[in-house]
Amino acid sequence: MDLKGLPQTVQNFIEETIQNRENGKFPDNETCQKVMEYAADTGSQKLAGLGLYYLAEYYWQNDQYENTLQCLTESIGYLKNEQMYELLARTYNMMGAVSDRKNNRMVALSSYYNCLQYAEKYHFYYIQGMAESNIAYTLVRMRLRQEAIQHYRTAIDFYSKSEKTYQLNYNRINCMIECGCCHMYMGEMEEALRLWNQIEQIIREAPESYYSKITLEMYRISCELLQGHEEEALKLAADLLEQLSDRDVFEEIMDELVILAGILEILPDGKYLEELIRIIDEKHIEEHYNIFLDLYPFKSELLQKKGLTWEYIDYTRQYFDIYEKYQQENREALINVIELQNRLKNVTLDWTNMKASNRELESLAMHDELTGLANRSFLHEYFTSSFEHAYEEHELMGVELMDIDFFKEYNDHYGHLAGDQCLKAIAGVLRKQQVPGKIFCARYGGDEFMILYTGMTVEKIRRVAEDILREVRKLKLPHECSNCSNYVSVSQGVFVRIPVGNNKEWDFTSRADELLYKAKSCGRNSICLSTERFRDKFIEIK
Image 1 (tube, rainbow, N blue to C red):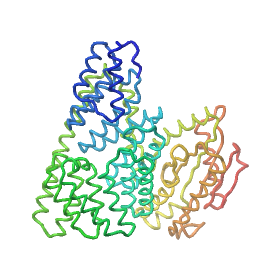
Image 2: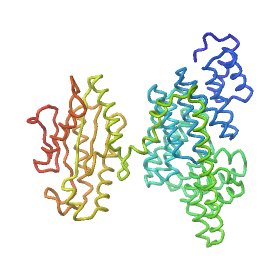
Image 3: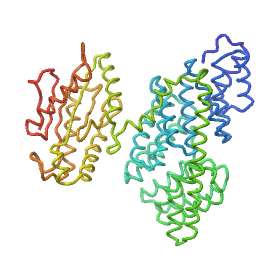
Image 4: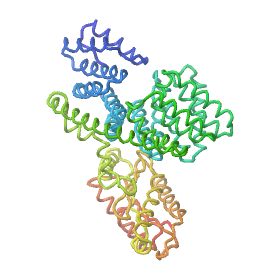
């Protein structure tokens, strides 16, 4: 942070405060007020933004979420005006955490994606890791574990690129634990154990690292069980539950209670989950709406198994009462934020940029509801930026159009529900091929899909296209009405070239469409790939 022009005493105080924060020490209220006094005395917007952010951290540590959100909202204008983008990214990340704590997940996701906008642009890898991990955890609680795994993986990659900080391994290990739990839920046991081995390696290489030992023990329970060490797993579970009687330990693991419940649920003896529920009931966590609501499936199922019908009914009634209460509070909180932003409009907020940066709300409207792939709107935005980058950097750009052979006949014969399942299966193949920054898949319309390739050679693009063709065939979805195969198949047209001169995205789309038509006219269930602008040169791949 540039402190030039400020009195030396102010510079010394701010530098010491920043250093303390980097070493994991959160500022107290007195320190925050001191920074705000210096900001008022010097008229420094930088100090105002910094002071408000630190004050927000202070309120966050003391569970004063409304005050946290107000400080963060006020800080945004100062941070933008002074181009303090790293702190701005952190601000959006904390706004997401506050919204998530209040169980307002859509607003939380919106804030996390706002954070990523700045973190990605300025390569703040550690902050990217935090935001991606937070997005993943939110998706876990929405039961979208497969999608969460992708974000966890991305977060782990960013953490591996980050410079060492006080909390790096704490966040990195927690991220791996949560990702591993998702793999277990999905039945991917080898991946879960592989992450456990990586965690152990991190601890061996950096034994002085700060990390949550109780969270690590939680994950170890499941890993011991996966390795066939049932007796050790049960002992660990009993020890951990005993530790939860300590208030500090319980509060440390509170955000992971849902994950812990899922781990205890897979133990052969249901008494451990039952004991966890008993401990949670004793702690009266009703004011933590998000945690209480997320634990409902575990306790309600337990009550039903034990035949406690009236207790189940009372608990369910309590669940809906709390759900309605937090919904109302979320509505009121959202209205308060909007009113605050309106008051600060001329001083601190650039509404045009805020709208452009509201990535998650756009994302909700930019993904195809049926397949989960990007829709035309998202595709257009991504295509434009990727095409401009390829043109400026003189790099290859690949555009593939793909559709399902005789899909109308498939729908007519098997019905539209089967047709939807077919589209989802094809989308699943494409989703596995996606690589951030290289391979982007979208539903183009109907049964047609578009794949964009950037930063890849022609040979690599060809191999990916072949993989898609092969994986679709391996689905072995029966198609009695196809004239080219007994199973569902696809035709692909792929155009690869470096954008030059007056090239536009449409030129590449049009050429890919020509090649798709050629693949169809040559019998379908094949690929036509070309690097030539004209129609007579292409590679046909059966």
